[in-house]
Length: 241
View 1 (cartoon, rainbow, N blue to C red):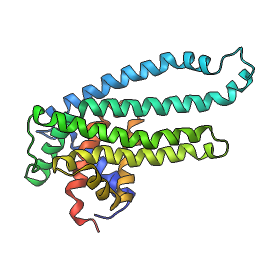
View 2 (view 1 turned 30 degrees about the horizontal axis):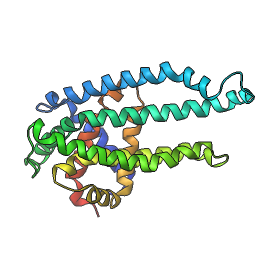
View 3 (view 1 turned 90 degrees about the vertical axis):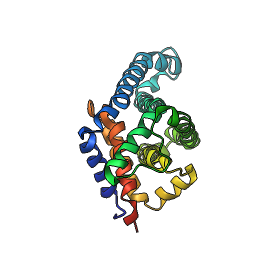
View 4 (view 1 turned 45 degrees about the vertical axis):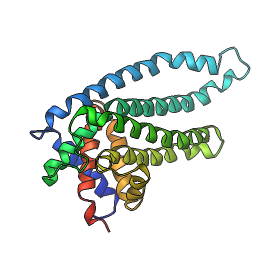
């Protein structure tokens, strides 16, 4: 497998195409349903609280109220990013057991063999999947908080959105590659090393997931498509130089 962003992006596209294959469709109901409910709730919460947060942080009666027109776009972007990552984190935390099962089914369809962990029931995957999600959440927060601070540093804040997009691509590759790798018993550090060995492919895959999540309607299928795409990427890793 060639180590390039296009390779990673192509696996996501192929993952999207596989969603309606016989034998997989029934495993999509839970991830897509969770995605829709969480997205609607968090989106509504962010939209309904936006004016209140802006007025509390930048009151119209304050001496610096003239800065509202300058800081409003920055505040809106920060809230959008916060909503986006909250949605991603919460949806994946709830859907993690279902995603692990979906990944195992995809691997069996691609290779003819189930993953060695062979966790076929929801009960067998709940605790490992939730612990893995919490580990990824800590990884995200340790890096996301300093990155958020870049948005308020003059000069550097011009580069902050691009750094966020790069981090987003990398983190989403880690997020979804965990399902097939976790089914093979790989620890978080081992998964991280695997992705570092094909960094450009991982960034292309994660960048594609970021883009897909921002497209209305299609974003509801982004989670299962990413799980399927990451499983395809894992199953094709043997050709990676």
